[in-house]
Length: 269
Image 1 (tube, one colour):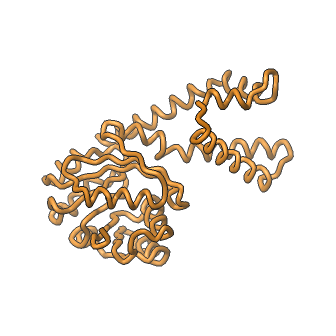
Image 2 (tube, rainbow, N blue to C red):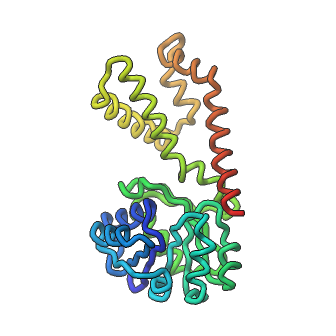
Image 3 (cartoon, rainbow, N blue to C red):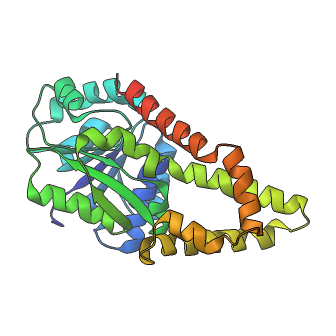
């Protein structure tokens, strides 16, 4: 697999998370990874941080690489696909990490039945704690697919899903770090109003997040069961939960996740 060459079109936050995460894990040779971005400083920055190779055009990258990550914004896909169309053929495997862009729309735009993998990673890849959902289409080779799985799993977990779930899964792992950061911000700001400095509340809350996640994964209990284990009748936790329930916390989360999915669908049109 290391004879394969991997390229990234787009040098933004997600490319940086993937490339730097893989570099930290040292699971794939950096000199077999190529990056192109329209902004020279972005590709040079990735070269300096991760040792990957910068190229001068998307077309050159596609001609050079076997597996190409399409890591531009959904709105930029038509222009980008038009630019690389002449270099794409059925030996090139494309990996789209864009919200809402179907594999069929990619192959139609390229007028080529090239193999396409869709993936929805998240930025904690950079810390080796990523969570990536991956969908394989029918003509993707085992070698290409396994390489993509290896790249993502080297810096987090990977779940394989069907393409019909790709829009909805964004709300589960792709966008959800932002929900968690907003939750953390609210907790830390409330703690500060009560006299607890961020330098104390932030580590306490982050460790609580990590420990709670571990409990969810490893305890064998459901979320409802774990809530009950923390909640004593008439206690402090119940008082807090009562406020969240009156504010329809679960409904708000449901509406936010649906809005995320609906926006992904809109971006794909």
